[in-house]
Structures are given as C-alpha cells and as structure tokens.
Image 1 (cartoon, rainbow, N blue to C red):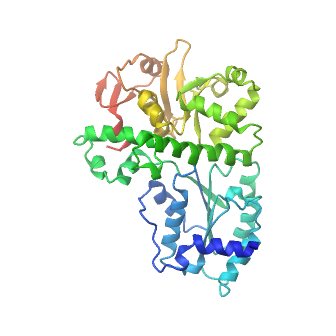
Image 2 (cartoon, rainbow, N blue to C red; image 1 turned 90 degrees about the vertical axis):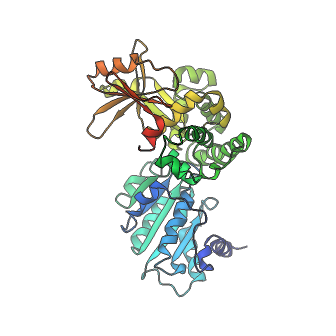
Image 3 (cartoon, rainbow, N blue to C red; image 1 turned 90 degrees about the horizontal axis):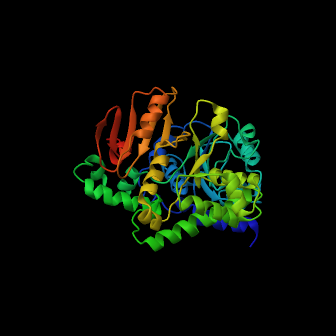
Length: 417
C-alpha cells in the first residue's frame, strides 16, 4: 500500500466524524484541565498537551474536536497520530487529506488539526512552524508524552506560537467523579469511611482514567508496567536521548518506585550500578522530563547551596502491592504530587519537613504528612528557623490546632472543603 493510500485509510479510521453525523466522545468525564485549555482555544497559538502516556491527552483532543464540530464542517477537523510516522513530511499528510476532500480551500474557512505524539515527527517544530505561519485559520492542537520544550532550540523556533498544558493523572476529586461518587466530595464527613476506602483504591490506580473502576491488583500492575512504564522507558526516552541501556533506566526507576521519597546519593548509586555519576544524573533527568519522577530540593534561601544538596525523588507511579505494604510512603508520595511541592527540608540534626511550599509572593509554608503519631519537633524547628507563625500537618483523619500548627485531614485539604 502506497503512503498516501495508507494515510487515507488511517484518516478514515481515526476521524469518525467524517461518517458520523453527531459525533460525541463516549463516556467522557469532565477534567479540570479542559476548562483551562478552553480559554485559549480562541487564540491563534498552538495548544500543546503534555504528560504521561494514558493520562487522557487523546480524549481531551477529541473533546476539543467535538466542540469544534458544533460550528464547522466535519471535513474541516483532522486528527492524526505520528506515533509510527516519525519520518513523514507534512506535505504528504496534507496532500492525502486534500485528496479525500478536494473541494476544501485551506486558506479560507476555519479548521482544526489535532496531531497526537507530535514530538515523534522528525523536525516537528520547524514543520509545525511552517504550517502555523502559512495557514493562520488552522487551529493546531498537539500532544506529547513528555515536555515538548526539553530539546534545545524549540522555544526559539516556536517562540510566541505555542502554549503548553500539563495533563496529569486524575486527582482524587476527578477520580471520585469518574466512579460516580460525587456525593463524597459534597459531604466528606458523612461518607468518611467510604472516602478512606476509595482513597486506597485511588492510590492503587495512580489516577489513570482507564483504571478508575479496576480492583484487581494484578491487572493494575500489568497495565502500569506494560502500557505506561515500558513504553516510556524503551520507546519514548530512547527516541529523545542517547540511552545506551534503557534497562538501567528501569532499575533506577524501580529504586524510586519501591521506596518513594528517599534521598538519593548519586555517587553511591552510580557505584552500585557501575556507571559514572554524570550518567546517573542524566538518567534521573530523563525520567523527570518524561514525567515519571519528581525531584525535591532541600530548601535553603541560598540558591547555590540548595542545588548542591541531596535531593529527594518521588515516583509518578507506584504499584498496588506497594500501596498495601507501604501505605504511609504512598500517602506522602501522592500528597507531594498533589501539593505541587518542589522543596523539602532537612538540617544537620536530622530534623526533616516533608514539603516546603512557596507561593508567588515567596511566602513559605512548612507541611508535614503523617498517617500515625504526630511529632511536631521538626516542623517547629523549621518555623523557628524561618520565623514562621503557622505550620500544617496533613493527616488521615486528625484535625485541630496544636500550638501554631494546624492539623487537617487529607480529604479536606485536597477536595477543597
């Protein structure tokens, strides 16, 4: 089958609105990020959706297509994935598209082009720049399995032409809506026991939409390993970076997955893996850029000292059996991601605070995350050192004030109560 015939076949298979009169995304559940994206659809810039595999980027694209189909002809909406077409020229794609709809004039009217896995296209930034500059009436939506701005020169090439939105796994509130438990959000105290039970299920699914209703640990584990992690480790990352042995990436990731929130000594880890410290540092950087891990710096007002200090690492994915065996660590792991933390704190006396949050006004808040007994020594030490009047401890169900430290159940903190 020639390239154009193959493209036309794929077009017809992946653009169902060309033959369905009233296209709608099946079983769509509202995502908070969609409302943020929607505000930018009227602007000419390219919209980039980035995040882990299987987090719903394609579904969001199709939801955007559904909204456009209410006002423009179905023929003017095109979806295509570059996952297996890295060497494709956009000219060939456009030619195949115009052969299906010879009557269209791309220079007039309104169009929507949705390109999945755009970063797989060789030289994608230059090719999209030409398309964007040539056809101002085409709204372009693209997706990527990692930040699209990680490669040198992309910001310069697409400067002013692109907005990037992170599509993460479901948060706990979205998860409850996905499984039809909206009432838990509206009245968490009334359904506290059910809420705690669902939270454990949520941690096991890691917020992946397709796993929301799954309860079998072996199914969840296989999905996380084969549909998400292996695809990123053995396909996505090696396509972007020079990785001699992707298996080592998996070893490093496993170390973080099985012990979330540990402080990693890169020199020691490099020795254990028989690698140079520089290679280990690069591999951790690749995992972070692929959204598989999160790095926290030891907080200091001295920026140079902060970047040299030991760092903590948290995984984006934990296996369900780890949730059962190490629930306190998984509880901390989830809340670190939920809070958007970038810093922890540890001093020479081994006082340690799980998260240090800094707002736009550089106001800092010390946050401890506890599932059992609550010791305020560390948070009080931090508050004294940085002259803070308030601290926060996020708990399973404890609530109240202890001196200047507020105790808050996690569900009140993350469900917005």
